[in-house]
Length: 149
Image (cartoon, rainbow, N blue to C red; front, side, top):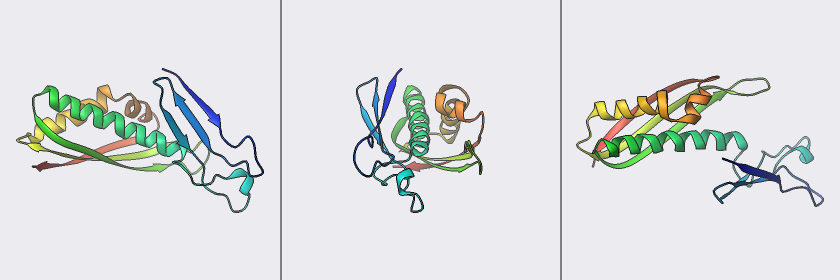
């Protein structure tokens, strides 16, 4: 896996803190910093997610992918899956994630509660590389709602 991240503010009067990531799979992702009123040259323009937001989003995508795949492989009629991640970060640099809570909303027909519990646990404990990696610094907790549709 590879990715090239390039600073977009290398030219111009206001350099900013925007970056473009070009992934090995051929996709592009923009990232930007928060504006800094005290030192505008050090801040972003709020044009894209912050880099740490993309880490959190990637973790959500990784675990949701796992949950859906595990449920589908179990021949469950899964119709939807979302995960809301909330986090806390360390006060000092490096401001790593210290707590992450993942709340899943899974919808489908006739899916047993135990199947959702198992899918989330399997993702958290074994399959989601991002959450397993982040668990080295963060306490990760999960919860879920199961909706019959």
